[in-house]
Length: 175
Image (tube, rainbow, N blue to C red):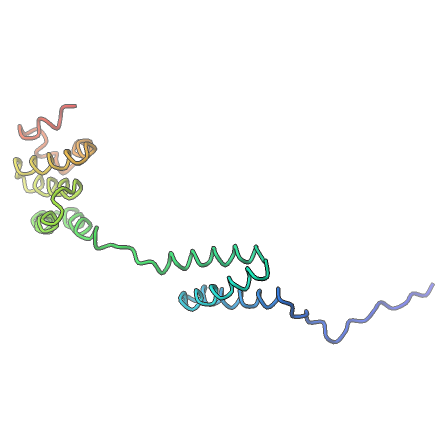
């Protein structure tokens, strides 16, 4: 039994460039920019692509573009670390037992934000490391007034071990 040969492949087997393929190519180009760390360029390309994807009613592509734009915005956003900078600096000094330096940083920060419970707690910690009991208790009192949870932290913080049972701290040991 003789069989006919199957049809031969045409010489031009490349896919036809329809609107979907053009949008896909644009997405691939934008994603290459994104993965290459060129976020601004990728953002510009994706914003242009978003309009085209909406016009073509390609909702899957719209979703992909929006998700990628959100990721770009998150990467481009610069967190405001200046607010926490004194706190972080003080913690580093306290961890290195540089209590006086930490105290200088905290006093400066407390001039502009005297009601900050965290800064007052760190000041109490620095003063406790320096065994300045009355001043440490006063700073702790300010911290606990802002947030009672600092009383629990006081009980857990080992830096207070040397001064914990002094009369100035008696009120913090009671419930």
